[in-house]
Length: 461
Image 1 (cartoon, rainbow, N blue to C red):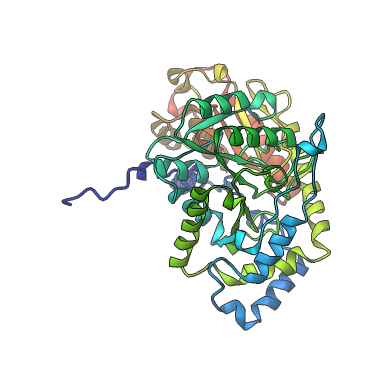
Image 2 (image 1 turned 60 degrees about the horizontal axis):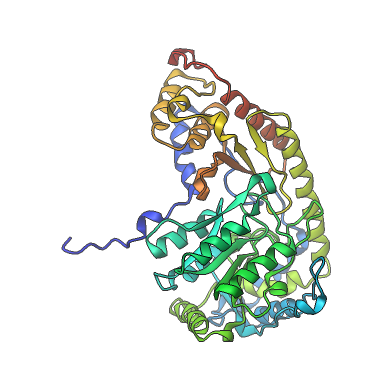
C-alpha cells in the first residue's frame, strides 16, 4: 500500500486471557480435554443464575421498549437508579484522622453516567479518546484490557507502578508518587479495586493516598470497580465516590460478575467532579460524542438494572456469593501451602487467585529449557519444547501444564508483569473438581521446579 495504515499502538493490543485459548486448541490432535481456568465467566463454570433474576429478565424482555433504542447515555431509569445509589453511599473516615478532613462523598446526576456495551467498550473509549501524549499510570500486574488499551493509545509500553506480593499485593505508593512526580506526561492514575488478577482489596487509607497524589499533581483517577460487590475475608474498602473529594475521576462498573451476567455486555462509567477542570469536561464530552456515533448500548440489560439491583433479595444474593468465594479462596490458599518455590496470597476480592514463582527458583532461560511436566505422547513433548523457545518462563510452565494436565491458566507475564507466575479462577462450581484443580496446579508447579536434566523425548511419559 502507498501509505502505512497501521496505528502506532497496534502491536500493543495483547489479551493473554483469550490468546492462550488458541494455543490450547492446538492440542486437540492429542485429544487433551481442556479445563478452562483462564476466563472469568461464572456462568460458563457452572454457577446457576438465580431464578428470580431470570424472571425479571424474562419480564423485561416481554416489554416492547426493550427492543427499542435507549438514549445514547443509557436508559434514563437505569441512570437515575444508579445515580441515586452513588448518592446514598455513606460518609467514611480514615483511622487516626479527623472526620472533617474527609468531605462527604461526591454526588452525581444521571447525566454523569454513561453506558457501554461491556466495560471492554468503555475502556476502548476511555483510553482511545485521550490525547496521545497523556499517559495513565497503572498497576503491575495489570488487567490486560486496561494495560493494552493504555499502551495502544500512546504507542508505547504501558506505564506501571508495582503491586507487592510480599505486602498482600498492596501498591507501592512511593513508586506511584515518584513516577508521577518525575514524568509530567502522566495525566491520570489507574487502579483496580478489588484487583484483577491478584484478588487484593485496597484499604480506604490506600485509596486516600491515591487521591492525595492525584490532587497534588493535577491528575484524574480511573478506578475499575467491576468487583466492588465481590469482597470477602473481612476486607474493608470504599468506593471511589466516597473518597475522591474534589479530584476528577471515573469509576467503571458492570453487571458481568455480580449478577452474574457476562453475556449482557453491559457496563457503565460513573463520572465524578466533571466540572472542576474544563479539559476534563471536554474529555468526558468526547466520550459521549463517540457514543452517539454508535447510537446507544443494548437496551435490555440496562432496563433490568433497577429491578434486579433494587430487589430486596439482591443484598442477600451478594452476601451469599461473597461467602462462596471466600471458601474457595481458602481452598486455593491451602492447596499451595507448603509448596516450595511458589507462593499464593489468599485473595480477598474478585474471582481469581495468583500464584507467583520465586524468580530465583525459576532460574535463567537455559535452565528453563530443562524444565518439563510429564505428557502422554513423545510428539507432544517435542511440540511443547519447540513452542517454549523464547517465551517468558511462566508461559513455558503454562504450556507444559496444558499438555500435561489440560488445565488452562494465564501466565502472569501476560498481565504486564515481570513477576513469573499464573492466574486461575475461583469459579469452578463442582466442588470435587475445583479442589482437584487446585491440588493439581500446586503439585504441577512443585514438580516443574524440581532440578533435573531433560530426558529423551521418548521418556516424557
